Length: 265
Image 1 (cartoon, rainbow, N blue to C red):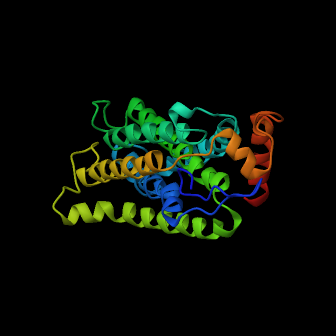
Image 2 (spheres, helix red, strand yellow; image 1 turned 90 degrees about the vertical axis):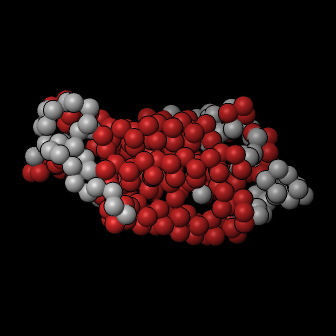
Image 3 (cartoon, rainbow, N blue to C red; image 1 turned 180 degrees about the vertical axis):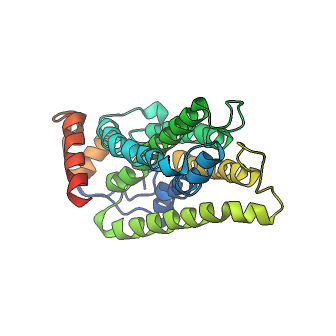
């Protein structure tokens, strides 16, 4: 057995069977990442209206997150394919750790957009809110993509449906938890109102708890999952070791991604 618990008697290529616990650890961070996305989408209108945004112009703020994700996802995929940093965890985990760290910082800043003395409806407050929303989506996408890619890297075809089922369960569970947090904390006695221009504590605490859970769930993956080294990865996938480091560029990949997105939207 190797360090992931996978059988070492695999053929020249073909991914070995992984223990169920390893597949859970690969996907566990989906719970925290989806909480970040849901808190952002469900509370963004309330936060921006609180700091003085015109409700009729909120659509401009909602454009930023999907636009950021559309650009970031293919870039992270391209560069993580070509990364190997064993001291930092491997190919995908360094990006996961970076995205998680930035997302946690932004999740602590965003709900406090009205508490830094910028002034109600000031351009500074609105720009700060817009930038933090975009950063939260970018960092969440940076953190999310490695979880998806590790399934393709490490899970064989027979176990992929199980892995994707776990992803769906954790993503939906994280979304439900994040959506009910403000109501739950209000029921626990945390204030759901605040002075003009300040986001209520029930929303602020929801973001703090979401950030803590994102950290915890991501750490499970970072410390419990060991990615395959380049030699093992190449053997299991039946490719040469330099197959992922040559050919194409991220700009070409981005254009294909945009074309695909436009076809279905």
